[in-house]
Length: 170
Image 1 (cartoon, rainbow, N blue to C red):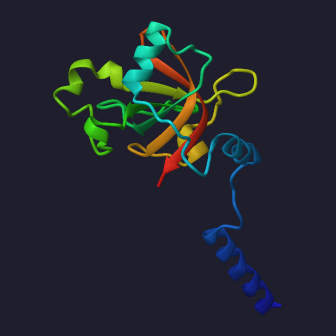
Image 2 (image 1 turned 90 degrees about the horizontal axis):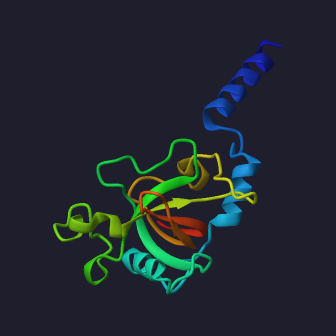
């Protein structure tokens, strides 16, 4: 009896320390399958070009576009606590340099608003999903992403991308 109890305790301790299966909620798994894609959407455009075309009316708010961006809000935290939203900075850089950081570049810093955007993920009812993007998509600051979505401007003239697809470059 003592041996069985010891064995049961040992197995229980192993399961608690190593985990027993995937603890990810079914809702998170469903949302990941809805938004995460295995390959990058094509026809990327720089964030400044998207802003300019939306402002001029050449790009309509209901027209999808694709941007390559890095999770980066400069000196501020990029993630919205408890929400599927974060700030990105254009990652096309000068001459396509993905390592370029517009927050450090003396030329880009002059008009930093032109290279940043807020990315939001909404549910079927159009409400922002109430799961932190870090948990939802396993994201961290400075991750490189390719995002497909539609855009509009908020009251502070920030480009807001309602994302429909996200590819995380790992």
